[in-house]
Image 1: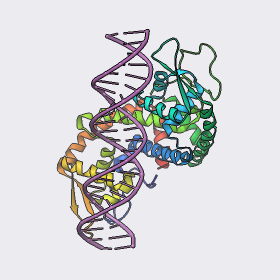
Image 2 (image 1 turned 120 degrees about the vertical axis):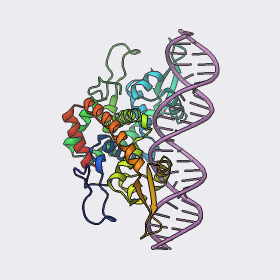
Image 3 (image 1 turned 45 degrees about the vertical axis):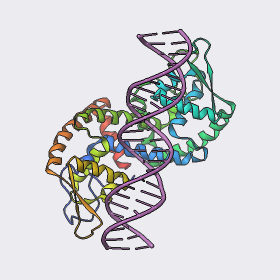
Amino acid sequence: MTSRSNRSATKAQPRGKMRGGKLVLGELDQHLGYFLRRLQLWVFHDFIETLKPMRVRPAQYSVLLLVEANPGRSQAAIGQALGIERARLARMLHDLERRKWIARHTNGSDARSHSVYLTAGGKKALVKIKRLAEKHEARLSAFLVPQRHRQLLSWLRKSS
Amino acid sequence: MTSRSNRSATKAQPRGKMRGGKLVLGELDQHLGYFLRRLQLWVFHDFIETLKPMRVRPAQYSVLLLVEANPGRSQAAIGQALGIERARLARMLHDLERRKWIARHTNGSDARSHSVYLTAGGKKALVKIKRLAEKHEARLSAFLVPQRHRQLLSWLRKSS
DNA sequence: TATTGTTATACTCTATAACTATA
DNA sequence: TATAGTTATAGAGTATAACAATA
């Protein structure tokens, strides 16, 4: 996160020296998507750095939490819930399986679908992972004022 | 954007049939970053689709607006303001130059730096681009309640 | 030495299509 | 024929490093 000083700079530039000062955002200042993206990048960057000891990336983390909360569900169900494309999820699960954190069993009722579970090792790792994730979330809460953090979370949650 | 029904599902799963219903988010429900990412993906997807007639992507759009508001500034200044890495910006500007939307002149005072400007064609294109971007922003405003949209923008702006 | 811009490489994420095996 | 999962490919975004020209 960088620039901090930008008011309603829709058209004019600040007077004064041309070469030198800070840039103005211009109409970018009116675009929610821009700020949303900047904040999201900051959050992911901090998450990745904080979770680096466990080498877990945000998408992997979301899969682990979802499998924990919904053991035995199919890849299709997981992918749909998280908005992860099935091709991408297949490779992610392959990687998580290689690390012995999740296991896939063919479901009895439908031989096509795989039921996904956390392994014992996966559950153990997830404890450590969550501890790091909490540190990240605390940093994010400090970054946004707590009351803003709650309100923002509530709004974003409703929008999903 | 998919799931809509998730309360405080931190640990337990809903009782009832195991295979079938919607998945619960579990602890993911407590992570601002998750909702932030989902919303950001939605916003970018809508932006890209809306701007498809002009084939402009979000990062390109941000560069065009910034150059419009700050004509003649260096690539280094632009990249720093937008948080775009100089190597990436060099390729982006190369592309925008190829499309005859921006021009680069070597600055008299420092032969290393390039001053970036919109061309006449770039300004003309930007009019059309902004018209499409407004449609996107209107859709985003409708998606979030207007008052939420304003408050959210204000918060995110302060966080940048 | 440090900075500006460039090229090149690698990795992640996203979007497709093609394929298999089941249903 | 449709679905679940897999593999492969291509594009964009990000992160580096190495380089040339200039300061």
